[in-house]
Image (cartoon, rainbow, N blue to C red; front, side, top):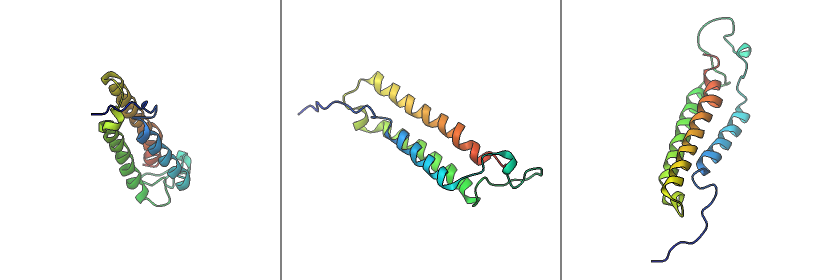
Length: 117
């Protein structure tokens, strides 16, 4: 059996986190959601409204966020992520990637979908 002596990538374990975050940021830039409460269609009244022109994007964005988190978790289980690293390093990288994804989802993106509700 031949050992793989290649140096592990510094992004190993963070690829899905970083690429998914970049894709979601680009999507939000293209969709241009409402970012101020005063700009909501239901401002001064009650009821639910969407921060997007198409209200279906509230559901789509939530599904994309869950998919992004799932891809980050799946990436941590791949053998290529663990190649050439100790178990503590793999665990710390997995915890970092999952935590970063969770914080980014909750603080950056969920605020957009709940802004006008």
